Image 1: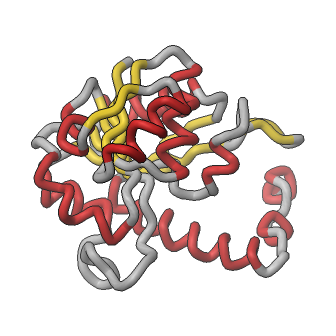
Image 2: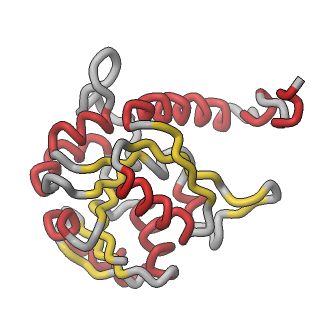
Amino acid sequence: MRVGIMGTGAMARALGGGWVRAGHEVLVGGRDAERTAALAAGTGARPGTLAEAARFGRATLLALPYDAVLPALGAVEPGRILIDCTNAVGPGPVLTTGEGPGAARTLAAATGARVVKAFNHVTPAVWSRTPPVFADGPVAVPLCGDDEEALALVAALAADLGCAPFVAGPLAHADLLEATTAFLIGLWTSGRDPRAMLPPPAALGG
């Protein structure tokens, strides 16, 4: 599969490198040509511009810093499969959140793209593992989206990393996934294990 990546940060390196190792053709595009070339050389991807990454192959991963997302949206064409791994952090909100449409739905409305929220719930260090498998098994990847073809494509990309993808609901549920991520990160950084809150599934059957 041919996959474009908008961004040259840690998420682009981790996910792009994993997809290259899985046999996919990846083009990374960034705002800084030198940094883009270095990332491409380090992962086996092709270097390009943000606009080229937005139009390359069957899908594009949006892996820009949150405050850089809005200026780049003009390069995304309607109907594009756009994988959103961003979280609403940084110097102020760039996309509408809170009482209005969430960030992922705003992306879809602003671009006409078929947006799938995915890969935002853990750090690049996890995606860099080959594969991302721990004692309890592979990392599960929740997917939120409204388009079946887009969900199936992103699920295949997650499986190619060695993960266990599952559809977690429509794109409207991406708001919940972002909020859950923020909550879990707060627990992890405070030294607490979020799994301690949840009993094993067998215990829920009464």
